[in-house]
Image (tube, rainbow, N blue to C red; front, side):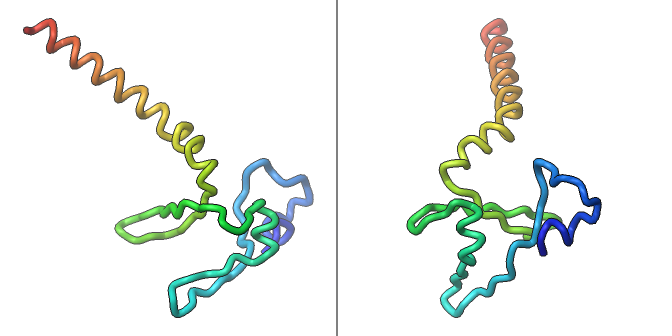
Length: 102
């Protein structure tokens, strides 16, 4: 399925979208082959490392995403950064309260 088959609006593609790029099979050894067109579009080369990220809903894996490892750190910072900032601030507040009470 290509973008044109997903969006019938005739306008430009949005900056972010999801598309079914290919259907792949898992072989007897549990391996899959990413089609050449998908690898080229993603800029993947032999020996590149991919992180396997799952989305779980009600205990079931509902989708699997492959993320190039070199991009993973930036994504983690972007998504977890605000949470970690708040967590560290809370830890600092608690440490300050404990020091005052001592």
